[in-house]
Image (cartoon, rainbow, N blue to C red; front, side, top):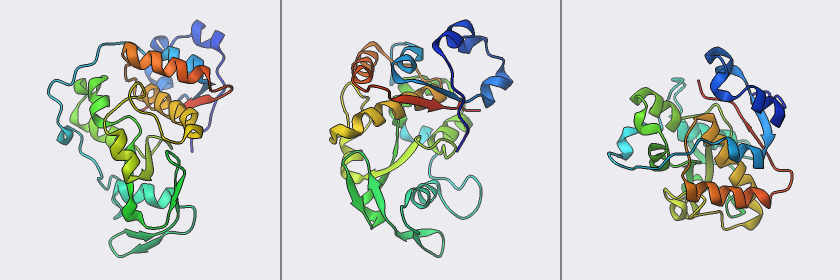
Amino acid sequence: MFSKIAVTAAALLAFPLAAVPAAAHETRAELLPLTEAVQLLPAAAESRDGYQRTSFKHWVDADRDGCSTRAEVLIAESRVEPAIEAGCKVVGGEWYSYYDGVTLTAPGGLDIDHMVPLAEAWDSGASEWTAARREAYADDLDADRSLVAVTARTNRSKSDQDPADWQPPLADARCTYTADWVATKLRWQLTIDDRERAALTELAAGCGQESVDYQPAP
């Protein structure tokens, strides 16, 4: 897990993201209140023109260790030593799906959710990216909350919706979810539209001292 550096609102205003040199932007980690983090998200209208799921190559074996991105997430998030068969096939473990508070021991009941769905990422700026950057986004193992193992039913209920239209069924999970969503959008400098900002602002207002940590993607 990357280290975190506390950043005050005053420092952010004095030294905005746009002014940070590229090298520093690639390595700097951020920790800030959720309410402030929401306001840092750039605004833009969304467009799904040209979107295809195949535009994001995913579940690859980026480090060539024999394990796909899905397997890597299952291994990392299991609360016990996972059972792994030949070919890095994960067949057992214990996973907590925080969207709905369900614990599972069989990976077949789990989906690996892109915190910000691929279609939403496309709408929010990824349509302008290279194929390589879209692949890096879809297989992002360098940030804890970019990908998360959750029950298949909650992932499919969420589909490609943003927090204006879908929030976890477990009320206690919604502040964590909001922070994870905002962190992912900040990490990849994805935009939000007006409805999304309104929903995130309302959620953040009810989340007390919830903070957001993120590291800008390379």
